[in-house]
Amino acid sequence: MALKIFLIRHGQTLWNEEGRYQGDQDTSLTEKGVKQAKLAAKYLRKVNFLNIYSSSLKRALDTAEFIGKGRNLDISVRENLKEVNFGKWEGMKFEQINKVFHDDYQKWLGDPYNNAPTEGESFRHAKERAVAEIENIIDENKNSGNIAVVTHGGIILSILVHWLQIPLPRWRSIIQHQGAINIAVVDKGFPYISTINFTGHLKSTYGSGDDRIIDTYRKLRNDKD
Image (cartoon, rainbow, N blue to C red; front, side, top):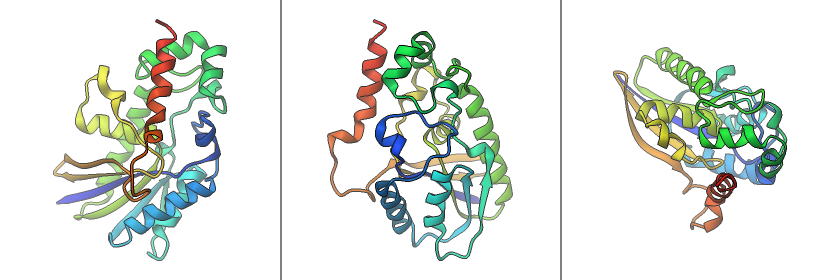
């Protein structure tokens, strides 16, 4: 029986806007983030969800509440859907981290799968818990249908990397924007990925600023050259 899974990233927060690492800090949605959550809910309004799951962090839960509004469904909160723990870096901007924790940051930028943030969590560990949780969720939904999973960029990335078996040198090539929707159909354990990082519901035209995070990381990695 096929299960369609909608992996949804939460809307924007102030720390997203300011370029700060959030991790498992409990930040709230900005006005723009609320709008993104509402637009995601509007886009998905005709989808008949069997269940809605969410990270326990407020930015994800608030996004999930908009998606669940009027559906008469309880939101199932899962701790293992929380964002990657960035340790000492949480609340800091990219450039600050590169200055204060330069060696750790450059190792992480080069291989965040195996290298953890200072006193934080590696993506290897995050992927293990994220995959275990999504497999639990799949097991809980034996019948065919649709489920929504509202979580964070790092967790969605971990699940997609696992499903697509992306080689380690390329696994971080996937980008997740705030409010993005990803869709997969899991049939007899096999994932069919139909949509990755869809944001067409958020704005009608593309702007080059949408990909500014790529330039940020590219420039920071070049610091070590």
